[in-house]
Length: 93
Image (cartoon, rainbow, N blue to C red):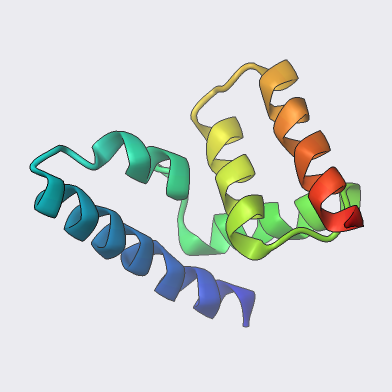
């Protein structure tokens, strides 16, 4: 089921970012890289989400996918940990 969600999330986030930036006359590619891990299949993202939720707290799905995208893009792990800490803080509210 997660894989089906991710399969729909990927083009949905792409279309939304493209539309927003098209209307603003800007390139949405940098935002797309934040919204979905490039180079990962929906099945790989679903597996990464399972790992994320085992290691962390509950977080909204799009936040988890953004964190996975950061790691897939090679972001500094200290920065990723800050984002995870922020997600934990938000979830505790």
